[in-house]
Image (tube, rainbow over the protein chains, first blue to last red):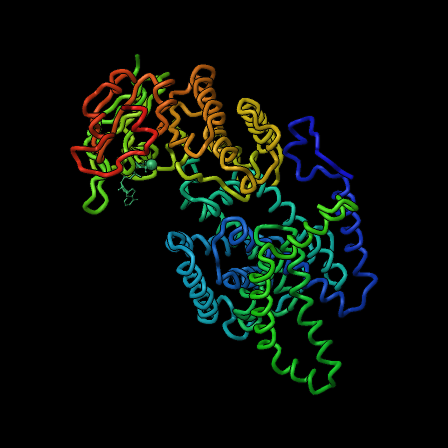
Length: 348
Length: 270
Ligand SMILES: Nc1ncnc2c1ncn2[C@@H]1O[C@H](COP(=O)(O)OP(=O)(O)OP(=O)(O)O)[C@@H](O)[C@H]1O
Ligand SMILES: [Mg+2]
């Protein structure tokens, strides 16, 4: 049984985790994920890749909604901006893919400054509605800016290769997505334990006290918005490559809701929650589809014709269930299990 | 005696209500100064003006030679004004240590790029911040709860954490709004001792709002009395205790208020 922790040095006090076990199992998981693309079939590999891209995007939204407590319904706008940023720079202009990735993040971040500067003075519902409107305006602008974006016809995107590595195969692309997801995970964990992450959380928990501690509320909200948009933009670039074709239809508003559902299901503000939530919410429609298949092919056909509608309903249901019964999300359940395990067989 | 904070003709109105009206007072460096007055007298509003939470309607605040009208609200902590809140304003999901580290915000510099990588500068300044926080934790004798989530602590402990968070910014002037309300005798005495140590060992000037007359009269160098937003008296504890205007305010005959002050406070002044 592990009892009190005794830390000796200041570097230990500021470490991400005091447990060697966490590092060990984290490394095991990373190796398993790196090996997985060679072991699973094409369908599972595609699902794994989608999960890794979603984790990256959701970690981005988590900076804004989880850490800072600001709700955005418009993150699909940054996702699609990132996808187009990449598609235009590396697809249409034929520039190196790394420049495409840089563009995907920075264009989304720049756009977030334009949207955020006036609207972040708004709170709660008003901010949610403003960002919602923003997402629709972005789609519209992309279609209108046909000379740049090819309008409604969209842009075909190739798998990238850079630094002497080709990510053309499904396996290699999954590895790229894994690497970016892991970098994003550590990046956001590091951000969280810095003065900036603490300022974000302070704004969420008590903005008047945060300002009395020296936090410039408007500037930090904007910083959270921009950092969040940057990460979401990168995820958008990956998603565009994953789809191999970037168009406005490929980025339905439902993706914004899906990301929020994942954060709520996983546990707001927790990167671990973002990962657990992504796995749960991504698998949910798949599991539902399998369950429906058991009722015969007609039920399954219902799923394929009304997939979007069914997904919306599923997301709505899990959001309501989690908010009602486990507001701490899956990460809360995980902590309970771990506590039971650590203290077993003592019951407290 | 150098004046650290000078409040000159300060007023704050909310709609038609004059919460603070024409208040003058000076706080000298190294003093422990108290603000007392019946409920609703405008004490917290005065603190909100001094700490930049609210802008004044009229008057001037001069802190360490600077006119506070030129200072943006979020720079008050950086120039050396720290405070606690009457009704706890902690970041309740964070641990004690994390709350206190947030209090150190103004001393940290790392940018978002440094922070994401957690190398070099960020690492060095986080370690330095943590070292300072541990000193304060030791000073306030809260080592045993440093990793506890603030929301799970008792009221008295949370008050102490809030004091720690304010100290973490290394303020020149510390504003304490009713630190000991709701505390028992022993906890109150602990806080009184800490306040004296903060002044004597850390050299921090203190301005505090208190209803508990024992602590006010025991440790203050100077006491200012507010009533209906106006300053009605100021001086040493002894001068204030015997001031007829103060007795009147606390006993409340002139203004005809049934219960102007908490019983304990009135009893002690009387
Ligand atoms: N933000 C605000 N908006 C409107 N009215 C306010 C505001 N803050 C305070 N007031 C009013 O100003 C008056 C003074 O309030 P204040 O909180 O400063 O009193 P106080 O002396 O701290 O009282 P207490 O001893 O009860 O804490 C009260 O009538 C209060 O209702
Ligand atoms: Mg008050």
